[in-house]
Length: 139
Image (cartoon, rainbow, N blue to C red):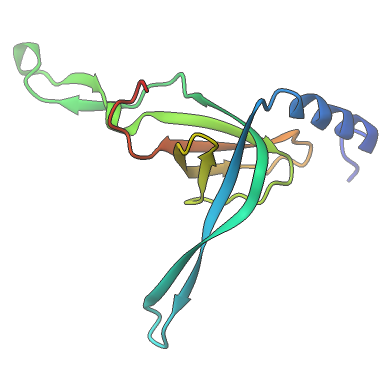
């Protein structure tokens, strides 16, 4: 089955999307060594991609949790600020996997929680992220 877009249209769409990726990050993953029993004996960080164009923003949908003690014994919903979600975009074809880290030039690290690159016509790879080392989630 032929794609909905021509190769030229896809290239143009990806170039337009790349222009919106104003930040730069590195994609870091791990190489894992296991012993004969299958236990992890060594985990080494590796750079999958360095100096990759990217864009990260806070997810507009807050993460809610339940807290007891609400009015009349009902549970009150509160925003769980320790698990604030972010969304990120990388150029189409970037090798990024769940549990990888995106490391910004500032040193800020995000863990990849999901990768959405299944659309064949995709202009970018969209990832779900959690900011690591959050002391102040608004920082």
